[in-house]
Image 1 (cartoon, rainbow, N blue to C red):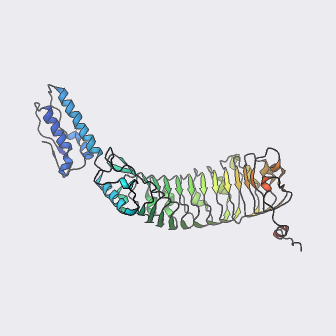
Image 2 (tube, one colour):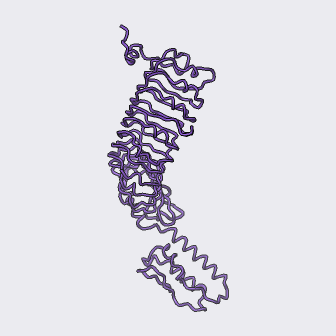
Length: 441
């Protein structure tokens, strides 16, 4: 009969004559592919050795029974290869479930269906009905339902070396995120809305297939790894609503969306951090402690569309006209900073700009009349500054559809009949003091 070499996993062929019956030949094949009972490698490795199988006898008098047995044989092979999950994957899945508090695993949840007396990757799945996907005998996706699972993320998760997606969002995982160096195929990591703590693991920067990282709404602290810029595949990064500190490091070169809202990041935005980011479309860095001057190069990033830097401590903004009048910039929010100076006319040079918020800063002087001439501008918030003079009449002409607010300034003749002027202006004493005059007694 066919035997399996336990050391090499190769199939040893018996000597078959041309008179070997189809039944006997097929029996040899079936025995070979049941070699896993002999503690040999899994069937997928046996299939790779199929070239060592014996050649068919040269003379078969009645081929119909033979091919029937061949079909049965391959049915056996398919069922065997689809039902044997890689052993290290099973070990990782068992450890993953064991690290979650049993009291938080509800019977109707995905983890409630995980029964390890059955094979995780078997088809059809009576158990393991959700929460994971397999490709062949390897686990490639671990996506939990939002069922308030409480526990930690086991370091043995790193044994799922073929994992492409890890999504544990909207649960109650806590503790540190373990090293993930071995997950070299990981493309999507989503751990948002949990209670993970500790630092952002430096191991993430070693994963060269990562495209999306969302660790928002956790309790991560410390500074960002300086090696972020080495992840050339990363497209979307969201670390919002954590406790991160320090400055912004060099960012991944192919980033499209950057969101690190509501942390404790500080310092200026350095050009070196954004060097070479030709695809960056969205920047969401509001509710931090960034300071200094927002330099003109920032708004000239070639793919930039949406910018939210509200609720920081910027004191100055420089803006140039876009090169050749071309820009995809649609929305800018610089509200609630400490920006001083005059409103730049160059904002009106961005052809697609539809929303501009500069509210609650320290701008002075008149509102540039060109703001009212930009037809693309639909939302304008300039309230809470020290702007003076009369607002451009174009804002109040028939057919104008600009919404927003010009209130809480030092403007004159802002018609209260306009929605833009519903909020009242500052008291004259405050305005006189702001412009160096003495308040009336």
